[in-house]
Image (cartoon, rainbow, N blue to C red):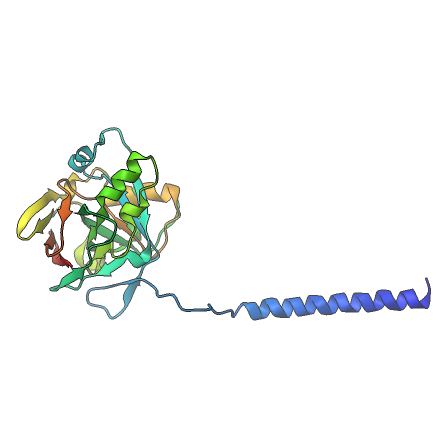
Length: 263
């Protein structure tokens, strides 16, 4: 090998090593990368604390009360639980003792209420057993799964995903979270919803087809659950429409009332 070729090879190797070092330095620098713009973290107030609950994902269980399943055209004796999601920024927080202004959403002429118990998780996992599931719960809240029913049904009739009927701005109305160490777990208790003072929904949590523990267990078979996940646990029968000016009052035994006005 000529001295010229040897010098070229050595120079090339040195350049390659220098390139590797440069790449390594670049990789190290990338660890501290920053987002090009900030994105707000969805949070929920916690009763009695200055800290807030950060929301990672919003899960909802469908048709978890037998009578509601029937009114939606399903057979609750044969169907396993099914879940859907809402975006985290669909959260609308409603403070205790206030009536929150809730905007009537676009594209719908049949806007429905669904009052629900919400479980907020402090931990998670995959394939969680029902016996261990409640250990994941940080606390509970009262919620509304607001629904553009006409859009949901239209998509269902076309055998298309009906996300547009469920996942939109302010569709996840919720009161503050109450830590389970103060409330205990909710297996029973009256749950109701009134519109302009007239009771529309009235049931008991004991009528849920799948308990909170079973919901967590079943959901963890499909998705790894983590701290920050919240689960809307289904609504009783007699869901129905509201229009601008209507006031919704939600009640759940053991938690403060929650109220919104459609504007």
